[in-house]
Length: 243
Image (tube, rainbow, N blue to C red; front, side, top):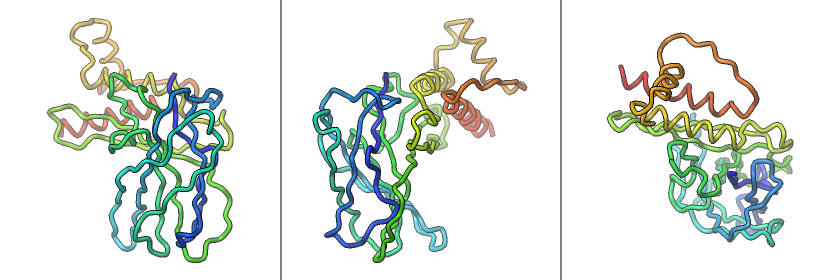
């Protein structure tokens, strides 16, 4: 079973520039159905991802993670104030990232990792508009998780990252479940070096899944959405490597 960092109380869609006004959230670490909390005590770190303005040709920036709180089931409903990004300007939008680690890798789900799920998966909010005159807006009802596929060692292109946006208002409307992440991780590791040569059966599976021949694929259930994305992205990495 995997655990996911999420928002029991999400951040607002708009927030004031004034440091005196708090940005309150309630983080949560639970299973995919949010029916079981993580029993371990872990530190939750936060960072801010700047949303570039295409008109001004600004670039994305992610701040260094800093400790926000320690997760304990006894404090599962506790509201926490999140410090604002530094040097804010009116009209800027930022996303809030929560993770249990201090590195950039901890902010994405490493599908290529043999030990996937050893720590709760990180979460990213939708953009928060910082303005001098914020309007009272509806709470955010979507989150984003980032998934990383590592390209082969001989491939000079950067690793592929894709994002999946999920509704949080209705749990059964989720696109990602444990089964989808587990299958996706297996597919990615099979494609990028799953010891296919040692098993005729695995070699046949690899040829069926990843060859350039035409395939008719039936998608069963929403949990396969991430697996389908993983397969498509793996093919795109392979294609660039052959150009």
